[in-house]
Length: 82
Image (cartoon, rainbow, N blue to C red; front, side):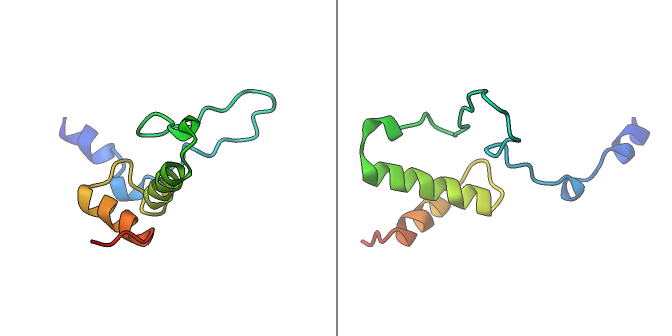
């Protein structure tokens, strides 16, 4: 079992794969992958802006999920203040 652990690549050597970007798939419909369901159909521009900001943060920082502190940082970057 020790040999199998040593043969596995380290996490640092595995490249980040942005699954939101897909190769040119022709006419196939591309479904967006999100942590939460797509709320853009609600028609609320402020919610859409927030969702897109969270997605940009996650891609930029190679994070699948973010903490509340990181979520707060995204809110502050959009102009929220207490």
